[in-house]
Amino acid sequence: MSHISKISTKIKNPAAEKQKNLLEAAMKKLAEIHGGSLVTSVTDYYKNARPVITGVKTPDLPLGIGITNGANGNIKIIGDKYGNEEQFNKLADQYKALVQTMSAAEAARQQKWRNIRISDKPVKDKDGSWYFEMTGERPTKQAARWG
Image (cartoon, rainbow, N blue to C red; front, side, top):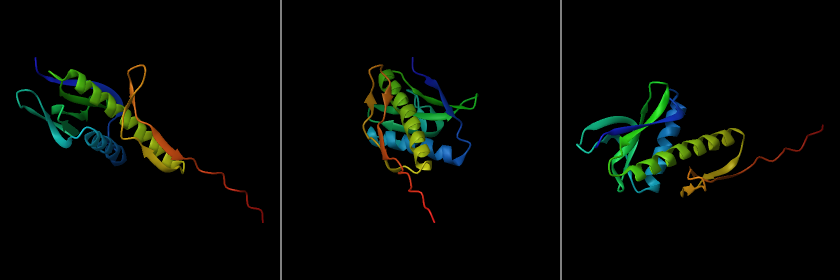
């Protein structure tokens, strides 16, 4: 039966503008990877729309997947899985991996890393989880100045 499913996450509510920007950037990258478009609502099989903070519709997931605020302060990933459960779960897992990688990239930038890049191709680990490779240059130690 078709209905909107919810997946709980450990991603915190985007009350801070910086966190909201990161969540939206991750969804934008997911759309680019899968040839989709950003949306502000997802639909169920019966064309009932549910508003989301940000979401994506792809050729393989035309009803969409998006994020909303959960009751416990964490983000929930929502969408209609019916007939597309495998693709829905794949995009949900890749979205969580993107948020984690983009958060790590932001932390690295704060530590003065340079040329940080996140791969455009998700990688499936042996245990079935998804991740994105991140590369960058560590800051060099500055020579002590005597004088």
